[in-house]
Image 1 (tube, helix red, strand yellow):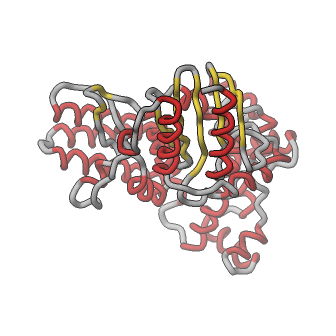
Image 2 (image 1 turned 45 degrees about the vertical axis):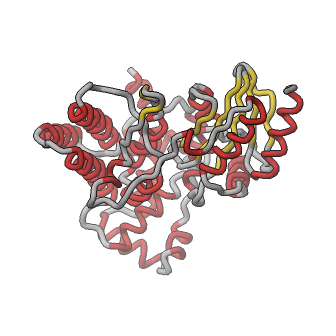
Length: 395
């Protein structure tokens, strides 16, 4: 089949599905077709991982629960996505735009494009690619051949927790697809996002992990140890005390070592991940705050990348600005404006430490009016300029 025919088919698929379609030849983009007006392709942060997927047909799930399908044939790769089954939050769309190096003046256009994507099940994208693969190669594949597994029953009987690190073997060989799902899981722990974690466990694709030991019980315990190591470090990044996080990890590993059955290990693993996430959430929200103050804290963190207005915040909670400000000051000991700036500085520290984004980009993303404003506020609450903080942590 000629390249022009493939481009015609890809364009038609994109129009019918309502999601972007791309063609890569020897790793080079030769077609990008989208009904949405994207200032930057949302695939950008994940492109290398998606193109590295093995097999004729595969899929990739991002930390924001968006998914991409990919079909490979010789030096050709067709990538469809992103899509999802539930709406993406405004904050997540702004974070994704930031990850894609979208200019601040184009962020709203990027968000509008993301909102207009057609939502569909991952299975539908895979089925489309199976059909395209059949046209190209004559091979008859179905969704079940691409290993999208049922996640089992609710926790209590064990299998729900199993969905966090469920394993399958294809053709007798372990096939790794853990990176994207690990990223999702660890990001939820770091944020202390217990609600998203619970939803993720019910909807995430199964993880196919590699063999760590010949003995089945030892394999599960080794996987548990790896999970404990990763999760504890994600919790430390989220603000949990280092000694507490590492001691808790040791405690869980000791509990795991004396367990004898698969279900015991699986359930302990689920509760360990949830425990870390709850502890980070408590650390970030405060353990003894009122419901109103907790809502303020959540609101600020959810809208960390925009210029947060106290008036808008009060209106969203159906209280007066005066009442909200007084209540927050009485419980927290700081003004709302001071809290907002401190939270922005916390997020700036994370971005300076764990990304290579420029100082200007970070300041704009966090809603500061200018680079000098960002630098001034950052130094006020951290004692260092953004450049000094980054240099110190990079070294």
